Image: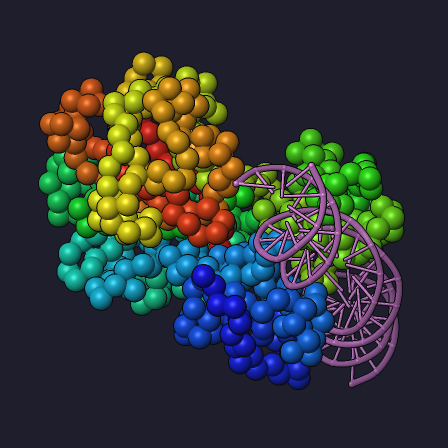
Length: 250
Length: 250
DNA sequence: GTTGGGCTAATGTCCTGACAACCGTAGCAA
DNA sequence: TTGCTACGGTTGTCAGGACATTAGCCCAAC
């Protein structure tokens, strides 16, 4: 039941811009899809026609489309055409989302720094980050609150040569923002998620009860060159927190 | 410290094969990397040289490299070159892994089917899958064991028009294998992971104790056209199970 | 009614060629 | 010694073309 006449989205291209043409096309299409100008399920123009209409080559248009297919916004079927994917599947995966999804809620996130020191990397941390044992790392202990309710206890380890950490900066903007500001772009993260019951110490830190269910996560984040940038070991009040994310096949 | 003379991996190409050239190159390179012929950190030949040596065009070689960069096996830096990524970051994300990672262990997985029936889709299930409420779906309840130890209780819902389910098939090969055999290729999955304490019923099913920490997961899986294929609501003994996976940025 | 062939339209693969942008380094000049 | 510049090497972008492969449809033949 897709429309027989594919809509012709308005695509503005600036050939003088340093932004690559394929990326400009992709963004224009993305906007048209998000705005509903190209409704889910409808067909996109075929590559040849689109290329001609925009006055550029087919490979460039193909690359733009491939980019959007890769993030799940479009679906291509050989011999058939290209369709706009359903909104359900459109969400991109964000590395930071596991961390900072709070700020997208209406709740006000806040982190209190319990401790910040420079220590030789413990074995487990060094191994995860791929650095030598004993190399100096920052060790940070924080409690995360949302609306005065304690949510999580977070332990982070960052090699000192990555960036400089201060209590003020950590409480102001959060660790991942600081990494980004230092020019470190995260590429992938290895995660382990589990659960356990709260010990007395856990409970006291979180203001919870002994035996309450906790959600635990260990994560190692790598930058684009594969260098280990941060190792974290956290636990969350299960009654107040859950992880939500998309996994892509392959 | 990368080698000044990049190694020249043996790459066998069959131009008569229906397998795309870029994919043949990518697989050859992948084998060379996995085997250690191309050690982590070493530099790859530059695109031009590689293309000439293989007797094919630069775009084809570029596509092969892009494929491997995308799955984290290679790291490219403009103006510098292409390096083999560290093994830590090399593992691809597998949708099935959250399900079937047990078989990669030495432990013997086994699922017992407690119930299999055809029911009208409950609201939550229909909403997750993007189908109309009341549409017929299979409802499966299973217990997963590993070495006679109960691990998880799994509830799955699959639209009946996707494939035919039987108790025998489910106990023989597992749901995801059945979906694959039916020609359904999973594309992405939305997941929510949380934790809670076991109720009396939970404990009885799992052979655990009331109040034990449980790891919970709800997942909706979509095929390549964005069609909802399976919804699952599971809980695991936290002492025996954890989720491990890689997240890629973007 | 069913099957099979052929046509059409669309995406998939691959080629050649050209230029741009970027990184590191070597060399030169202040 | 320090800082700037120029250059070589490498990946990034884009054009235009050719042919292959696939899915869906219509229609003829059985």
